[in-house]
Length: 367
Image 1: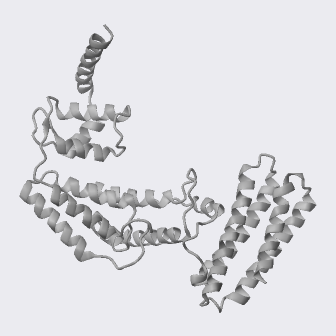
Image 2: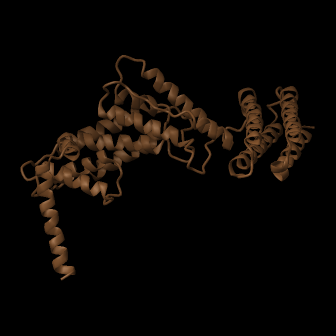
Image 3: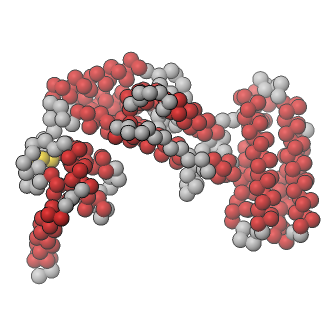
């Protein structure tokens, strides 16, 4: 019964795949009408016969199979439209119309069939392409750097799902989760007072176990303890462990199915940091001013010396592990200012010691 409609779809799609570039206008119009009719018949059959019988496990598997089959047909049409150099714009437009029809069948199944729709299945290429037109961006006027960094990490994670330059297709579950996270943030942004802590706690409770989200938290903790003495550091880390454990999250699936839940991942990490932490980190003194260190970091970053791409991460590392000629503790704010706003005097000094390095290389290796 249901099998006949999918075979009909495959047969009609096959006609286009074999000889579409040679079709005349009337042939294309006939194909379009038959394809849309096959999609309409399929939609009616799904709604008419299967809607009230979804508690039957064999039928769920049957519908899951055909859901994936529709996605497969959609992807074949998308590939044809994208990769065929000889395809006219008229045929491409008709293909888009058919792709939209297939998506409506899938969207209707997702909305009405509950467990009969497999959320773990990857979306179609067309669905990804259509979703990529919407880019997530969250902003708060005059927000602090921590909150800005967290919002940026979340937006980048959600936008990566539909990144056009990647082969991976997101699942329906991931797309729904992304929409939920976006809605939560949009609601929070309407509040008069919001900071990184409130935002983090809300996403933490949704088990938003994205790598960028976890990394933001780890960097935030490391920055918070970088200027503390041993006892204060220990107290801060113990408070974080208790806060993560007490906040907890409901036992629900996370954003990434193959990763630990966010509370388990972050609690383990803070416990490890607290266990390995022995107090203040031994710092290496440099015979350079803060402005010279800032310019040095910038030069190395711009010439590809660092694997680390996060500028804030680089600055935190240097603040934690080095001292300047006159300061035993370098603030990240002053180092960031030096990184972005070095003057010509500082540049001249740096050029002089870089030239001395070059002279040493020439003397030793190119006599």
